[in-house]
Length: 104
Image (tube, rainbow, N blue to C red; front, side):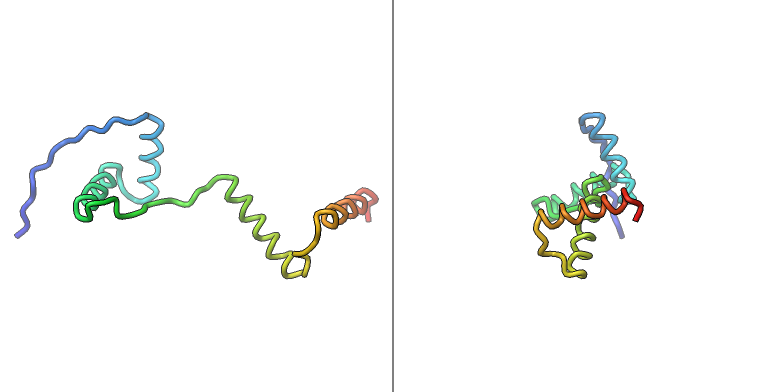
């Protein structure tokens, strides 16, 4: 038979922007902030340390830029262009721009 322990309230003070961000991230994890704090507290007690990492993928522009860079790198390797010097790359760009300007 399961025994339920009496519930108590706990107040945590934090910056309002941090609270908004925390609530939003918890929703992404599919839980409330209250549930997340309970999961954290139970795990800390059981393992006597902070035993886990919960994270969401970053959705900022730098990640998209990195993805684009990696895609370009893969394409360069497929086409045998991964060893081009910066001068060669700039010359290719200049050549492309000139062709585009002339309507070729």
